[in-house]
Length: 282
Length: 267
Image 1 (cartoon, chains in turn purple, red):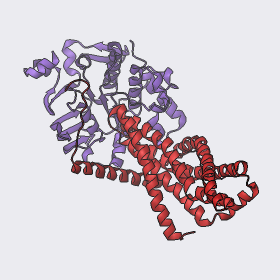
Image 2: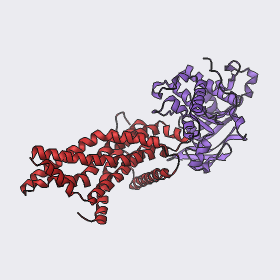
Image 3: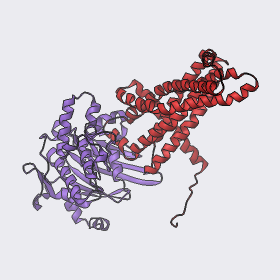
Image 4: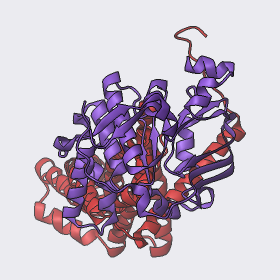
């Protein structure tokens, strides 16, 4: 399915001060009741990089995203997002930082009682200082990016699962965030719709150079992202030549029993001799 | 464990007490935030008006019916006792004072608790389990400002006016029973009803709905925002919100009545 016409040209990173890394976790631990979900997790997400998080159900992948956004606080350790330590920030200060981060939730988390327009424009409306015509223009741009302009007056209950996911992406990108967090963006979708979603993520990565953390259960999504790029002239996702694959800024992080057991690129993953990892990716 | 087995999990008294204390703490924090938000921007006045329409105008039919029939049954029940002492004409005073000081606020509060505390708990609970509350926080909006404070303000204001309407309909119901069934004079009924009320009755009867409205909305919002466990959790929260709000209304009613009697004296 061909991708929609590109509405914007300026990568998000250019508009703000560059930071060495987008996200850094330092020895982060978190337990729920008696279960240690995360055990001294450390990793970094470089600026412009995409990191795919893998692990079995309950391994703490979604928890990492919520910690990065400050929706939860860890029991110990530090988390830095865009140079700021979120573990020490108050909820009020976090609201300001969250303006630079976008998140796509697992089940879209669209507001049921709002139309698609109101959902996508939510952050802009809450700002209170943006004129109505500017809001309308940006909503149209964001929805055309995900090819859903025709749904602007519909309610989430009238949309399919894939459409809701795309609207959630439009809502996350409307303010051109520097970091996007994706929580199972293709979960529960058919292969064709999943590829559409992956194409949007690749486009966001390559055109806007957005840093992103991607939680996914589908290895094939991450492999597509590692072996494809978004061609701006053709306006669609195309396969990379095998020699060019190392230039794609995507890495893999695998969690097991609360610990990081792998953090590297596709080549390192393919060469890994760890039995669990080999079984996981087979 | 075989399919169909039912397991009961017992928790220790210490764990139970800890759970309840934590719940009380969370409720107190929510109450504090909902009040503090009144002095912070933005105020979400549009949401307040919308909630006032849903809570106030939406509850009007049941308040009218319960107020009217409460006054009618009060007149009917008291008639047999009063007639034994030849004091049937005191019905108007009894209905008037009873409705304005006690039955009007309490019955209206219980009706609104059943309708709206459950509505708030189920709506906010559904939003919580589908991560819409997290999404709101992720998009830079404080959910207590956007969702809780408008509901609290709307419920307090609307319950005040709904109670007045309920009181009036109670008097009308009492009047209908008095005149149509008991053969009393309508003009005499209304004159007695009006003259029997003193300012402390009206003050008592209008302070209570303000407090009840606060209880209903904060309890409904608390159980909604603390929902866990999917659709089953939403159902649980909805039930708990109605039960706790209703019981708290009766408890608060007792203590407020005692306090107001101490402050304002007996009639």
